[in-house]
Structures are given as C-alpha cells and as structure tokens.
Image 1: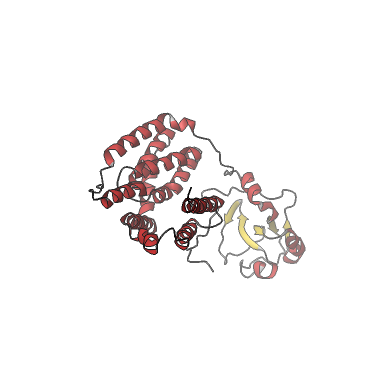
Image 2: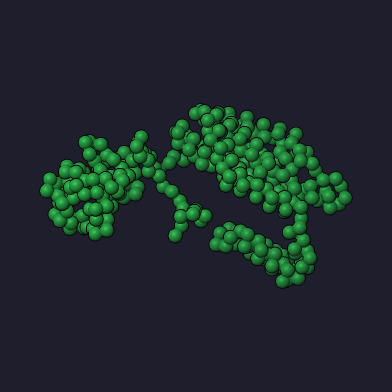
Length: 330
C-alpha cells in the first residue's frame, strides 16, 4: 500500500467519523475533505475545484432551488392538501396514494424535498385515521427513493452516470431513458408495499393524545394554571383584563374565563370581568396565594386543575417550532 493510498484512507476514515458524530455539518465536513486533499497534494487546484463546474453538480443545485421554490410559493402545500383529499382512510389506500404521489414528485425534484413536502400531510393523515405514523412514513421514504430512479434528474447517481458517458465521448442519457425500468421497479414495489410490506413495518404509537389528563401531565400545566373565582366584593369587577393589571402588577396571565358554564379561551384584553366569573390564570402558585385576598378572588384548591378539553370546536392547542426564517423572531 503506497503512502498516497494510506493518506486517502485516513482522510476518508476521518470524514466518516465526523459524519457519524454529527457534531459538524455535512457540507462543512465535505469542504474539509476537499481542503485536506488539496493541502496534502493528492489533488491539484484545478482537480479540486473542477467538480463545481460539473454538469451533474449544477443540475443537483438547480433541482434543490426548484424544490425550495415549490415549498416557499405554496404550490407544495396545495399538492399536499389535494393528496389528503384523495388518500382516503384505509391503510392500504393511504400507502398506495402516498407512495405514488411522492414518487411522481421526486421524479422531477429532489427526493428529500419531495418527502419533506408530504411529511406534514402524512403525519396529519395518520392522526385522522388512527394509523401510526411509522406505518406511513417508511412507505413515504421508499416512494421518494423509487421515484427518483425513474428519470435522469430524479437522483444524483443517474446524473453522474450520464456525465461519465459524456466524458468518454458517448451520448449522454436522455431524461426518460431510465423510465421503463424505473417504472417496473416502482410498480412492483408499490404492489408489494400495499399488500405485504406494510404488515412488516414497525408500529410506533404516539405518546401524546387529545385526552386532557395526558396534555396536562405532558406539559405540567397544573403547576402553572389555576381557577380563580371572582368574589362579589372583588375590586376586579367591572374592569377589563388590561385595567385589572393582573399581568403588569401581579405577573399573572388570564388564559380564559368560565362564564355561564362555558369556558372562553383567548379572550380579548378589553373584556370586562364580572362577579362570579372563574378566571383561568397562568402564574406561580406562590404568587396566586399571596395576592388572592388583595384582588378579591378564591382559588379552587379542592378540585385542583380543571380537566379542560384543549382540543374542541372553539380552541386547539398545538406545539409549534419557530423556524430560523420566522419574520417575528426578535
């Protein structure tokens, strides 16, 4: 084994370790490998940067741009909503429709982007039909991979093979040269997954449900929420939520009002407080106990935290993740 081969294997091994550790971004590791090959003299500067002008690389970049444009312009969301309407509720039909849809999309766009577009739709359909997400997401992933092999631009290896032909003076592949064989493989896979493969998939149930007790326990709401009964002599009566200064002066947030046997969440700041109202208040237990006499309320300590249904016709509670591009950050 020559010294150059040993050096290449060392660089490759280090890259694999960095990829597996996930401590450094994949693109950064790739650039580090390129830089290492350049600094060790294994590649000349022309050879090191020739890949950036490779038609296959440029095509992959273009596909990523198209995929991102479909997502940001809302076209992908429209496709997802249409798919959710025709997917039905049966597991076999859902599997077939999702795999077919993502295969068609990944044939003309990046397969990761195609799967990402349908990911929220797939999870939503799983919840509506009470089918574990694991039994739908794996077929979705398979469909995106299989769809990519049906066209030239569907997956990078196809582009690399076409570029290799062109480099040796042969005619490159055309867009649909892969389609006949790709469709056969895709069709067989669809039939297998719809009728046989789906029974072999893992069944991972969701840990969160719409049961109020589960919701309260998961987010420990009972440690922060309480019912405050407005007494007849309370100074809060007649004041709006803003005028009561519950937030500014007492660091308490009114989440809702129970009035006439009906819980109203997300009330307006100018809503007036009445005698007999039950305020659903967010704050620490110590703060509530210390101010209850001052603001003329009583705490419902016997019943504890109310088992309110957080998923009903009037209100829904969801866990949201703020993306890096969210316009309201800061």
